[in-house]
Length: 338
Image 1: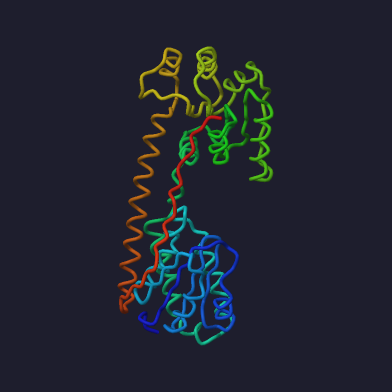
Image 2: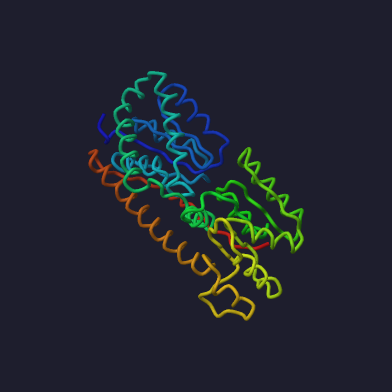
């Protein structure tokens, strides 16, 4: 099959299912349909059928139509995760492979026509992901904190003390890998809620909630391998915290304090952190996050360019019809303490 015969419809709509006409065309083997929580994608080789199925979508549903090379490129970008809200994710590729396995098993004429194109698509996706998107992950404070702790040499996984249980702690803690995670917060209820969420996400995860007393917190600072502080600075407590962190221990890892920014003018109470050993503060974390996002954005742009190059290499006729273009909102990191 020539790519000039490839037609694609991309509709952004809730996951209530495709329109009846689209579902009927899929059941009859006339259209390959991918349904996710973000979109409905229809692939066929009949222009008149594509016209009919496009009209089956409600007028208020944003709809994009692609033909030929542009249709293949759109499929490639979709399968690479480049059209997802979290650009570069891999789940959609698995959804496409599963949907194709079910459709091709029906052995329809369309399945036979599309077989070579889809197999080529899978090869191109793997090549692009391997070259540009492998290990791209997500750029967030949580992912960077995990990377920082993992880079500590000679200490192993150890224990991580999380100081705080607000929104920032809740966004960072799920990323942590440790033999045991300790949580301290002035509100025992909030600490227990965060611990319960971590255990829910990973069955068997070792999580311990420390007593909400100041003495229990300082003992955690003395004994933990790593400390991740997700609280604002405290003029009365920080000198004690810094002194507890400075005490000798069997294995000293990293101290990540997201309430301190040593790149800014320091209030008097924060000066105790200037000499803290193995400290990574919020200002440095911001610089790492910005650099990581810039690198990630560059790789995503190169992957998008590669999709166009792969599509052109596949050959065909370029023709584009567009009724609307749907763009996903960027996902911003949350940095609230409470």
